Image (cartoon, rainbow, N blue to C red; front, side):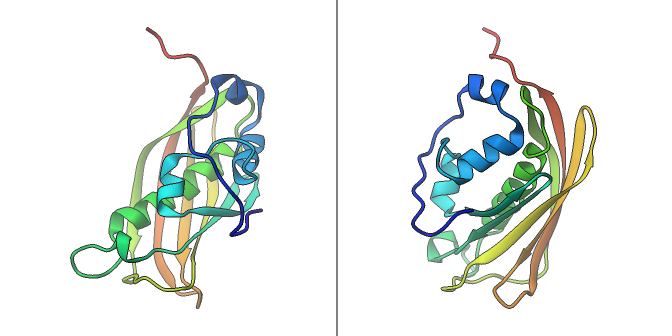
Length: 165
């Protein structure tokens, strides 16, 4: 889906595109650079590598900018990567005109993460898709396939509408 040479532009997605495209089309278009991506994705260096209905895989290579005072990757970086992966997986299941927002998520950290030259890999999978709520999980692995963290989320699904004044 993505490679290291792919150029992305950050920004908000136009409402008319969200109303006319399925979630899978939107997430794929973002992954291909045809639609803007969230600025956080560029700042943290998240890269989509696999996108299918109900499943999304991102890679990232954290560095010293993402360290906490103890010299390991900050939990907020890991949480953002897992939340992004899970919520994009949910987004891929939505029909045109439907959006989502994260209601809650929980992260379990299983290993400390340090900056390396090798990317980490997060896989998000939808567990349940309802009319108004979806749940998903994600797992984060290092290059040696060791589990670094795992998470679950609950997302609320709603109609895409222009904000009220």
